[in-house]
Amino acid sequence: MSHPQLRDVPRLPVTSGLILISCITMLMGALDYELNRVDMSSLAFDGEAWRIWTTILLHGDFLHLLFNCFWIWRLGGYLELQAGHLVVLAAFAGPAAAASLLEYAIQGPAIGLSGMVYALAAGLWYAGRRRVIYRDAIDDSTLRFLIGWGILCVGLTVLDLWQVANIAHFGGAALGILGASVLLSHGAQRLVSAGLFVLIFTSIALAASPVMRPRVAILDRSADELCYRGYRALVEQDYNRGLRLLENAARYPEVSKRCLHNLDVAQVRASD
Image (cartoon, rainbow, N blue to C red; front, side, top):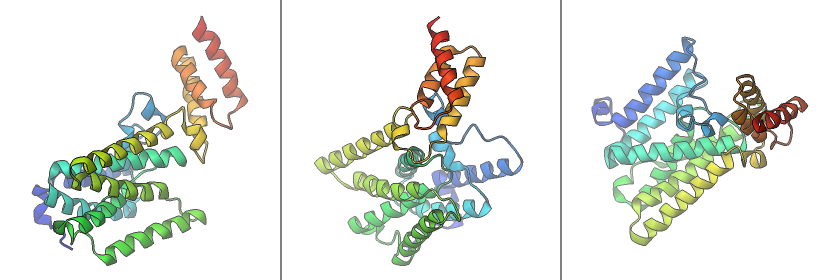
């Protein structure tokens, strides 16, 4: 496998920039800077869509950051050297957003670059089977390690020893393969692959939206967040926004009586 070297940093502005911003974000968190403007939450569907992408910059600890940046450098750097800046930017942005939304839709907010790591690994593996120039992108031992690590993470999560964004891992891998198919195919096959990617991405975004998420989420913690934000909107006399937030909260299976009371108040105030 041909890896990028430190001397390649000037040739890898996208990969190097992502790693640098992730490290700066980690440093800001360590210095107690407030980072709640960049994490994933329902606010992503209320005028703060950047959270879908910026949540990947956050990491739980230094080892988490180091692991992800190592693989982003090796895999993302390889792709940027081979295919150029725009291709690697698309390979970062698309699967990162989809993995973030998928994890949020089913289980809740996630942080870190690992969904993108698995998207790159799976996409490069697929590309290596289709194009000679990508044949050394990812070797068998690296592939086995990442698969084994993904399985181990599932086991640790099931045993409640360590909470990992497993859905983002495997969802990212599937979308990485589909994204590689779009980039490598031609003619009608490219149109079909691109259409399928757009359809899946749109479906994931809808599943993560306030309207659909209560029906697909395993965890219902977002109801509390929506109830609080709805209450704050009522306090600020923004009754229409409060009504919208509280209506979204009421869609969840478990919602407090206080929240439902605030919804009744919002309905009365918004109609005045």
